[in-house]
Image (cartoon, rainbow, N blue to C red; front, top):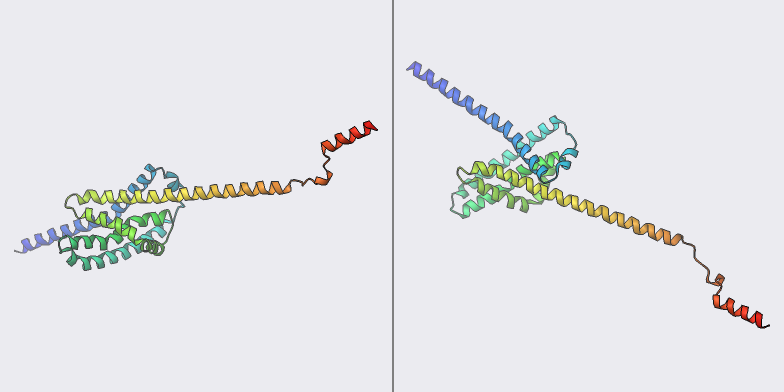
Length: 227
């Protein structure tokens, strides 16, 4: 009996150790894979220069920001899950509400990497921006949450949601680049118009009183010859 208990203790310890290892591996490796996938999608969209130009942020700063964001996001997700799990039990309508309510933190979680590394925002600024644009975030996150509720296929949709978030970010960056280019073109046109106007103003004005009419000169000459 004592040997059996000892065996059970060892077995339980091994299971707990395995779970802890898997959890740590998941928490450490998965975010790294997500970030690399995110970057690769941006490069495929022709935004590699944006990634190459980003300022290198101290790893400790990113670490503390990541810890702060992770704690905050986890608290939000746990709170919403506690509230929405009973709602999810309602057929169809409950599932829709569950996806909508939990969609915002899901979308924010996929966009925080872009905010922190490319925009160089703090977690607070990222959260404020995500909440300001909450309808876009809820729309994206609700679809991602619904796909991840599908059994078996949810593992695949977990990664496709990251690709979708990266494509969303790519569209935003491309629009920002176009807006910046249009602003530069407008400024160049304004400078050109001002330069032309300055050149026109600097042209000397001809006094009409000093202009000798050709016909008058010809008539004057004819008068002299008749005399």
